[in-house]
Amino acid sequence: MIFKKWSVLAIMMVMLGTILAGCGGSASNEQVMRVVIGGEPETLDPAKMTGVPEGNYAQAMFEGLTELDAQALPVAAAAEKWEISPDGLKYIFHLRANKWSNGDEVTAKDFEYAWKRLLNPTTAAEYAYMLFPIKGAEAYNSGKGSSDAVGVKAVDDHTLEVNLERPTSYFLASLTHSSTYPVNQKVVEANNEWATDVSTLIGNGPFKVSEWVHGSKLVMVKNDQYWNKDKVKLAKLEWTLVEEMGTALSMFENNQLDFAYEPPMTEVERLKKENKLQFSKIVGTYYYEFNNKKAPFDNPKVRKAFSLAIDRATLVKNVLHDVHKPAYAWIPFGFTDPTNKKDFREEGGALFKENIEEAKKLLAEAGYPDGQGLPPITLLYNTNENHKAIAEAVQEMWKKNLGVNVELQNQEWKVYLGARKSGDFQVARAGWNGDYADPMTFGDDIVTASGNNYGKYSSPAYDKFIETAQNSNDQTVRMQALHDADKTVMDDMGVMPIYFYTDYYCLNPKAKGLIASPTSIYNFKYVTIQE
Image (cartoon, rainbow, N blue to C red; front, side, top):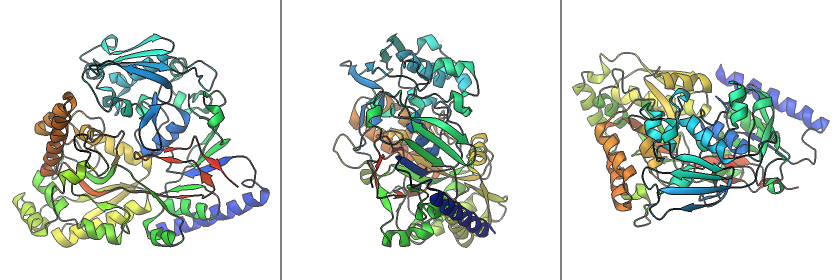
């Protein structure tokens, strides 16, 4: 029944596209980029968003102090330049002259306000920890300190002083993340619903929102107030909001889209042969999140049994068409160890391997021989053909290898995010892409206090290793602590890695200048459509 629904919808979209093309809607010479990267955003408030689609929408609307260039290195963006003290504890950022999309001047005070708002406990921001390297930030966020004690201060309209608790080698890279974008204080404080109203969605980036048809499309036009507007060639950026990637692919192949993110795996081989697929490196792990606070997954033996019973190599080959790599650790490939320039994951190697006999033994030791006595198990995933195919393969492996019946449940993006945040799940599909170019972006995601740790994995030993890595300026000590943390969470199987991501997408060959970052955030600022 679901397949029929997609097919009918795809046919309707194709017919609509034909009508529009006949009317000349997409035949205009106007520079327009038409994109699908996901569904309806949970929010467009930088302090409250968490998903990859939202991060991409925000990247177009806002600009942080730094951004990633084509080599994935942080470069000047809203900040024109900066100085760092010899001990690495003080940063002085000098902002460019720039304006918000409503004409207000962008000032250092906007950054100070946005960062303290992110840290304010009443904001309940999952990404508050991104700023914890700043002096007094974690204390304020935990209710033990004050806003005035946070080490960020607007010296004047164009100078921002930041004092850190500890030297943080990845601090400039972390400022490319959407959670650190500025917001317009006057606009935010005038309307609690500012992030859902087109008239108040004020940004400082290359595009501004002109239309938002909920559940259908998000339209952005070039922001003529943007400091670097002469480099922005696109007049319009149109985001179609659909979660069914089969529909997105049909639209792409009927010239209704210029960019379709992660088409269905069932189409990958054909798209490869037709040279319609592009790949880019990404630091990301696709995993299943256990609810560590509820039986039976509060027992590490049950978690390990479920993990050891999955044949990842077969799944990657047969379901994922070898686009991705099987994951036998939490931290993925793609991070460079600064002490020896080797890949962090290659150095750490595989931290576990599948073993069905061991899985059965662990399940029996936990009190569930051959799965007997287990409560009904439900696996939650968000609406997407690929997630469904993976879940069905895993469901079959758990049945075959452990004798466990698992029910599958899919939910739309916003509902699924809400269920995970509230802990209303047993096992949930999840993915984590690095927010910056350091393995710490995976390490601190699942510490006990992390707002993104929806599975509530908690280990004093793990937290201690991460704390050691955060507090040391010795790269050898840092890397070893991160390896130790990685091994600890895999020994506990606090989360269950399935594969390491490779980003793949369909891109109109006429679209030039797209920057694909290893964080799965695409920069459309320099894109042109060449005829």
